[in-house]
Image (tube, rainbow, N blue to C red):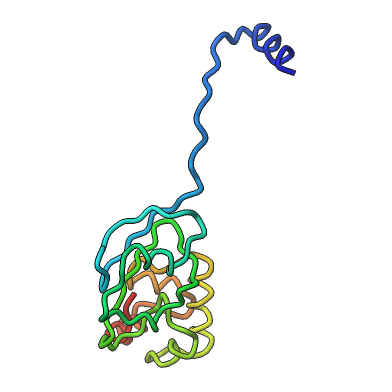
Length: 150
């Protein structure tokens, strides 16, 4: 097989073959901030979970981890904001359908659309990104902005 490949390369005039190293697509880079000891950027294996990230970032005693699904997979470029226990906003990245319905202007269909958006595109990178969800425009965002957080 190698002989045939060498003959083809010589016949076609190809005298230089450059072997490129494989791209590393087995890792992701995510950012964590908020109520953790070690805020910053982390490189993790693809398919890593929030729980694995928290093991590295070390949540503070004031962190409200009940807001998050620790088994949630992380995606390239995710920005994780760990809230403190006394925060009164609802996380659009981690809230359940029932919690999302508590937000002014969000019903069952829109709550489900938010969850489906997260599943498809990963975590919201900023609050304004929620306007990409069907049923949420600038006016609805303005009404609920004080109630939501990442």
